[in-house]
Amino acid sequence: MSTQSSERKKPKRSKIRIEPHQISSEAREGNFNEVHQGYITLEEVMKEAERCIMCRKPKGQINCPAHCQIPDMMFNIREGDPLEAAKLAYEYYAFPRSLHRICPALCAQNCIIGKKGDPVNIFDVVRYIVDKFGRPASWYEIPAETGKKIAVIGSGPAGLTLAYYLRKRGHGVTIYEKLSIPGGMLAVGIPEYRLDNELLFQEIEEIKKTGVELVLNKEYGKEFNHSHLMGEMGFDAVVITHGAHKPKWMEIPGNEFEGNMHAVDYLREVGLGNPPKLGSKVAVIGGGDVAIDAVRVSRRYGSESFIVYRRSIEEMPATKSEIHETQIENIPIHFLTNPVEILSDENGRVKAIKLIKMELGEPDDSGRRRPVEIVGSEYIMEVDNVIQAISQEPETESMTEFNMTRWNTFEVNEENNMTNIEGVFAAGDDVTGPYLAITAIADAHKAVRGVHEYLTGEKIEPAPEFSKPKNV
Image 1 (cartoon, rainbow, N blue to C red):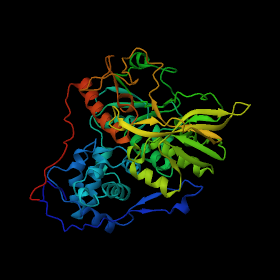
Image 2: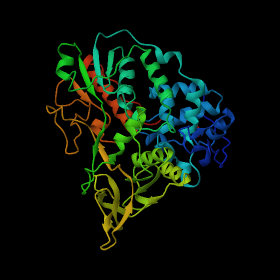
Image 3: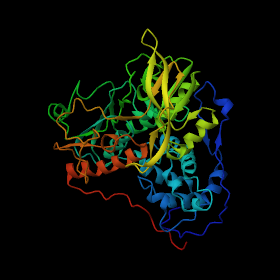
Image 4: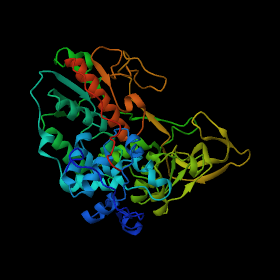
């Protein structure tokens, strides 16, 4: 039932949130079984959807970077048409089943009713309908071929989004991925207790059914570059979406010691099935989602792992639900603490980390209070490994002809995401820096519009930020 053919009615709204299902903390130990189970019955989903008040300017939709039409989906579910709701989800996302396992749900964080109670659990409502009702037949339909060919570099969230939606415009698309498996950070950055790789690979196979080609084990700067792709290989455009996989390190003594590693490298090897062997005690440095993932993974492999973070929990940039899950799993977080040196034994292997206590001063450029060292508060903690998770950036050593920002991201035209080189575009973390899958998807949609207009002259209107419910 479409919202265009039926007026919205005020729902009989319950103020009580329907809680999703999860496995217990005890059941998580030593395995990578999916922790968050979501809703398991349609009745749960419909009751939760009924809590949506269909606000005229839905802040949940406005604050979703992809602007998925949340009120329309909630309306269709409440009216007994979850198939139509699923269809709407598939209009916005090339891999919604995977996304709705790892998205931080900015929609729910901005839900109006969350100001006076629990916000609508949009995340798990959508997860259920895309899991249970699947892709509509129209998802696979491709219009007449344009004859244009596009090379997409990288198969992460931005690359997959670009490939599918450019294919839906009739263009030929080939994805080039340097790793032996597709998915980018979805596959080698997100642990499988959050997103099972087999589910992700299934969604990628569905994308390939539309005619998208996927080439693995091919790296930009080694086997090819943009000139080769647009010259000998005959591509009409190239889009660089290879993500931010290059580690950034703390500037402290001891980085060279064996046993000190970066979370990006650690999680990648875990994702590829080659988990590095860690000692019994592991310090993970950082306060973002990557740090959370690294500490929870290393704990599952049997190490006594903990986090060291230089600010307080209020400033911690990790998703609040992930911080909560870390606490449920009894993983310590040492707040207001910062490393100053990594120490080694006589063989050059990590044996300890020197830490210093911090206090919060005035806000810095990020708006968070600046951590300041407390003089004389240093102490030493014995550890077998250090995993740094402070940040990462795009690998651009083989891309010196492109204009870059001071954050080592691509300078692009804000209207269409084209770089300084004609016909070469960039999207996702290559433009925004390391951030969320949903922001990479949103940026990819903008690049889709830019590439299509560049190749055909046809302008695509962006998705509306919100619809206006009737009679609510």
